[in-house]
Length: 160
Image (cartoon, rainbow, N blue to C red; front, side, top):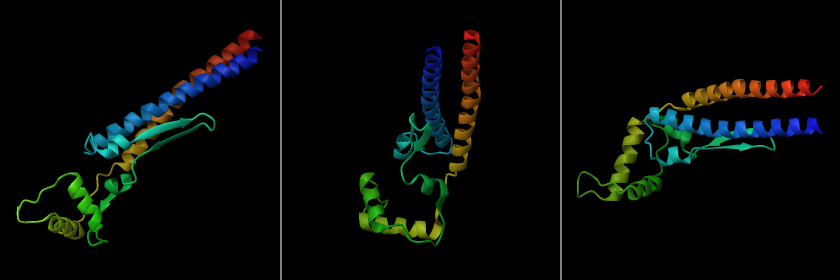
């Protein structure tokens, strides 16, 4: 009976540790993105989410689909940005042209052409995010897992 309680408490500690680790990694990812000039209240930063699946001991984090695009940027003279997407973006953020005579359609065309000719500089945060997440994971696993194993072994041998 004592063996079952040892396993259960160890499993509960591991679940709590990994759950805390998921929350910690989520905070670290957001911090790195802010360091790389991603706006604090942006949809991308707010979309970062981490989760832990205790059934499969799986730890994962997610972000909006354009995470990679913002990090990598866009090269010059590649496929043009979709016109409709630019128009929706202009309307969503209520962007006004400098010239009051210019329509939103004309503004979308000007932005599309500028991106095509000049590209968009990337924020280059993917590698920094991955490195930070890995360091956080390794540090937590090293410290907490070692403590958990030590406590379990100590309890096991004290019962014998």
